[in-house]
Image (tube, rainbow over all chains, first blue to last red; front, side):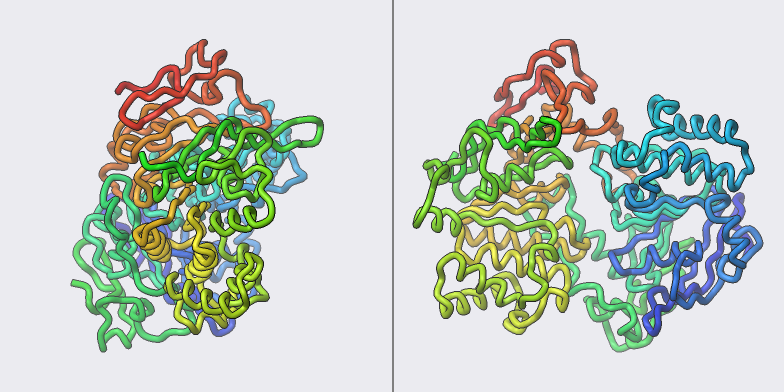
Length: 320
Length: 319
């Protein structure tokens, strides 16, 4: 299980991750792997469990029952003690959240917030931490970093706040970056800037990234591989090019077809997926079946992920 | 061009801020929308697109300039004329949850809306059922509360309410932005169906150019309170003239890995300035890659450079 593909080492192996809130299973036996330097897109619509998966890996969920394993650098994140998790969070795994306005403390200058991460995890003194923070601000494209250290979040724009958060997330040179909808709250021209920045971070290769998003356009530009989630399960995973060129799962196919394109089909009606995402806990069998054009008798039983060519897996009885 | 249904003439909407500052949300817009047309209105947050939409339907009064409907100014309308103007101009908001009263059933929400517009109770009931069905909601939905239905169904109810008075003009303000991808396509098709049924004039506001491409034959681009470019969609998407439009187009992530890897992206400097501190001259000059000294001093006039394609820029991209 822990063997990596040729030339790169496995960094994370998630096995049968299950997250239940009471009787509702928000995430159901999710398995995926991530190699060092790889960027994985975790894609799905609201309620599919993509954020819950990330929060479970970081052990930031309260009131949830978590099962399965997440092997990361020799330890199981799901079984690790709170002490060990505190060392990991922010140090070897960095996180970027969707809404920059709420991810920063409103009453503490942004420079101090980044410096605190460095002092806690790297044991830097005040002066060193300040110097490193200035470097980081420069790295993430904050102009005149010395002057911005003392700014409060409300004095900065959304894009600038997101840059501060990225600086904080990469401050300790983590092995893994979890980015949960990092550009969703931003305007499209600012989104382009932040994606460019994340692409640069990913390209440098020292860091693996899990990019969680509902936007297949963002996935197309940034990731190496994609896992598509639906109602708590991974329904398809493939290298990014392959997923877009030859999607196998009816949900992935429907999702890709229902994105409005800038360059074609203007005068045609949009292809749709019937119905709406169901309550994840309410179904047995294939969770997509009630909306699926291909649904058949076999779909009463939940389909496992099965291989379709190299590094391409699909959870569907009817896919061909 | 067909006869104008809605016109904005020198439209200005300012808001007073503390400390005598002025937020210039809409800052001199001339715009006409032909009867039966759908105009797309694109811009980023702070561009003033929502304020413009709200002013066109009369939810806000202009600070200066005027709105005309069917050739007549709407300023100072009262009595029967005001009632008629309200029935004729409706709006669909972005967030269907916020646009519906959580304590009223979908049916009652529409009935109340019609009662306010002067419909009798019986007529309102009948019409509510009719428009819910037009919006793709079976009769059973009439008795449901907003929290009992999905986001897409809520937006269908909001659309049903907007068309219930049989308006001539609808402002749709980011009507699908809060919806999931698979639901979004359904609502876009519903709105296209309403367009096809005819008679409806629409201002379709969105930050997403690919959605606008599917909904509108003509598109206007706003930046900091002004319309900087307007064109038929093919002309706008294939030969954008304003550097801002070009940047906006190139910033959209395409759901196509091969294109994403090879395209050259125009990455703008910085972010949209605060609408209470609008730059001098051309208001885009602080972020523009083509800006010259002239741009910092003189605001550009709107010129027509291609058929039906207007732009306000000193240095438009090559035609």
